[in-house]
Picture 1: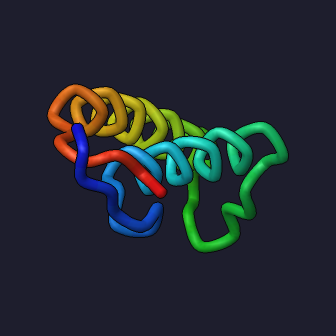
Picture 2: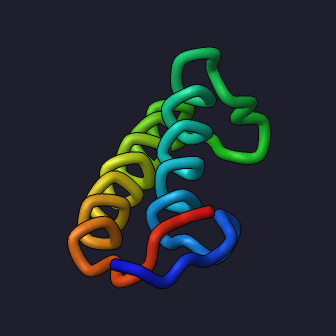
Length: 68
């Protein structure tokens, strides 16, 4: 891993940010006015956070460049 790339081109960074935002929205209670079932919003946020976590892990394992 000698090559470098900007942070904003990293799948790992973006997936991690999505996971953080989804988890944060779940903790503070995302507004669910447009959805009849607030539990559905909570479930969707949990699924998004889990998928983003997996993408982050896979991105790190497949990384070929360092972040600068």
